[in-house]
Image (cartoon, rainbow, N blue to C red):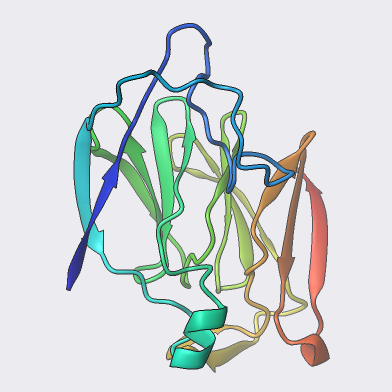
Length: 195
């Protein structure tokens, strides 16, 4: 089954980065409030068809409680929209004016949470246990393992890190924050790294 994923992309000329939405719910405080004003008339510029998301919690009880990866949660920086895919282990960059794919970067596990952007860098986490930092052209700048080893386990029908990086990335004042590990008895690791 395919779902239609449509985006309304609006840009204003009065501000260099008007329309940026650099992380989930806009900013490090998760305010969900942008200082930019929307135009009175919105127009659909393009639409895109992508596969349906594969939530991490696959039983009905937990699906109702854990909804964090049921829908796409894109971010926008400049004229590029970035979104993660939990079904095919990648982050994709799309041209906001045309909807065309600029690049895709694949990793070794589901990308369940939205990326974050700061300056010309894109940061995201994966169930493979890593925080990734990409340049805006999709090249790896660096990656950082969140757990103490490369140990793998079977999780959600996939081979993933024993310490999946499922803490949503936040960037604030040049510091990138994320966490890895979801089982307290295995250890949960929280990091603040130089972006």
